[in-house]
Length: 141
Image (cartoon, rainbow, N blue to C red; front, side, top):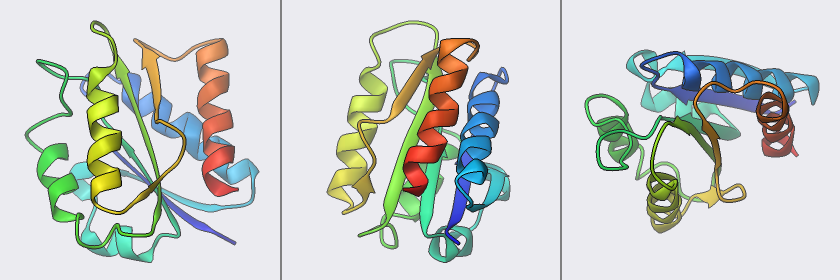
């Protein structure tokens, strides 16, 4: 059974909902899933997981959240090499450039980024909610 850590930051609840839907999909695939706010996550949570899913909404000038998520992502740069990583987040404006940059950064760290991340405009519902569940299944496979 694969261990999956879903670690996220959410301001309005959109990315939190994505995290829960991704966790649902991973659980349906038989994974043991731990869902954590980034403020509660540790380096050990990343090390112990077979797969890590990281979530942040687009902030400011299309960057990940800078107060908690940014320092956490930097802190795991030395332990993420070779690990499957899913990236996800919500946005309300822009083109998704923050996700493109985040994927490139994680690739530079040596992570095995799954697809090109998953982005959802605002709150995931309907087809977008289904995409989150499917992404959760994909990260386990």
